[in-house]
Amino acid sequence: MKNTFLITVVLLGLTLIGCGDSKPKPESNPKKTKLEQQKENLLSSIDSLTKLIDKEPDRASLYIERAELWINNRMNIPANHDIEKALELEPENEKYLLAFGNHNTLLNDTRKAKEAWTKCSELFPENISCRIKLAELYFYVQEYEKSVSFSNDILKIDGTNHLAYFFKGMSMLEFGDTVKAIKHFQNSVEHQPDFTRSLEMLASIYATKNDDLAIDYYKSLLNIQPENKTIYFNMAFYYQKKQNFDKALSFYDLALKLDKSNDGIYYNKGFIYSQLKENDLAIEMFSKAIEQNSNSFVAFFARGYVYELQGENKKAFNDYSTVLLLKPGYPPADDGIERVKK
Image 1 (tube, rainbow, N blue to C red):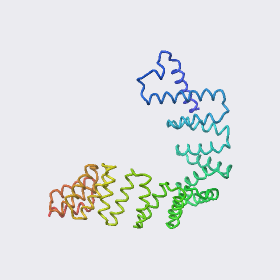
Image 2: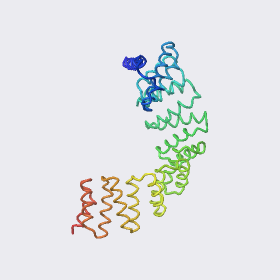
Image 3: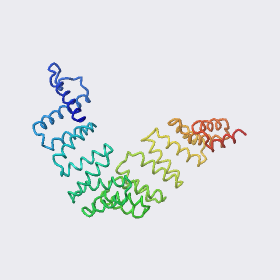
Image 4: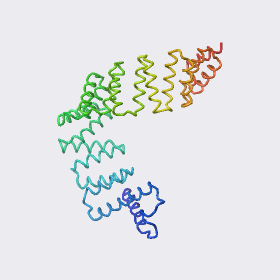
């Protein structure tokens, strides 16, 4: 009843718009913004579909068309009403079942989504899309064995499906089997070379192992996403852990070109300079980190420590004191204050 009322209100608005003879036509009003024009076009399209639905109320495809318009404009309640109506008319339509499940995930109703996708997969044994959704859903609700089971079903239908391999890989990681996870992620990339989610997982796994294969996967990601600042950051951090500071600084600089306000980049550069005993540069980087994030207690502490190393105890005391304001009881700052007070 609530949904019917909402649609009635929208239609009433349309009626009022249509009756205003004194108003200029959309094309003849130069003062309308692009957003206003888009909204008017949307209302016009919905009005047209509604008139068609009034003439053919048992035509399910019309409800789906109108639902798409609602969804594209983030109007989820009337969209859900229309998809439900389409399914009421054609309860065994696999496309509508998939759409209903997809939409209910937007509404955080995973129970209805699961029911729709399960019905779809049972009615249509060769349907891959609904099974992919179930593999994903079961992974995210931590039912990994079911996720693997649906992934295996998919691979029996299509042995090249990169998403099935991906969810098998993710589940294997949760089972603690990194070797099998790598194999599945590699299979995923073999069948879909530009699938970034599997490439990211492979890069992450090898980076954790301190294996330079991580760099190969990061480079593959950069070939696909050359403007992705996170990839440059991750490459820099990998080299930082390996104490290859020149390359680390180089990649942090590339990341900064894309993200000048990232306090974490400045902090990590400061850490590297402190390791290289280039204290003035370290202080400069920690100060820039603080400029970007005045609540970064780690940057204040790091700068205070470098000040202490340089014998600038007053500045060190001020930074350590700020740390304790931001993070009361932080033991390293307490210890630092005791040292510089002597």
